[in-house]
Amino acid sequence: MNLLWDTQPRTMMQITKELFEETGWSKHTVITYLKRMEKKKIIHYEQGEKAKLYYTDISREEAIVEEKSNFLHKVFRGNAGLMIETMLEQEGFSDEEIDRLIDLLEKRKGD
Image 1 (cartoon, rainbow, N blue to C red):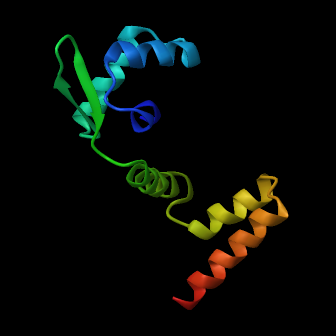
Image 2: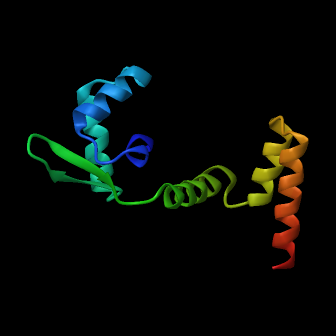
């Protein structure tokens, strides 16, 4: 998805070439993922002159919101406080990141 969000449209071969450099995935693996994403209606293609041209159907922001929600429910049973607590205990947050989090929580508390 990141490849398509960065530049679209892309052909399957363009996607394969770039992903092979990063992951070692074969053309068949890429085709499988593209088909799965088409079924989920998060990408589509248009027939170009020589190849299919792939486009995203959702924005990066929409995907982040959806994935965050899925992750929160699968891993933390919907408990955002537990997720934040776990992250604070396990991750090395900088003072700047902690200040930002405090600001966000204070703004949210008033809502």
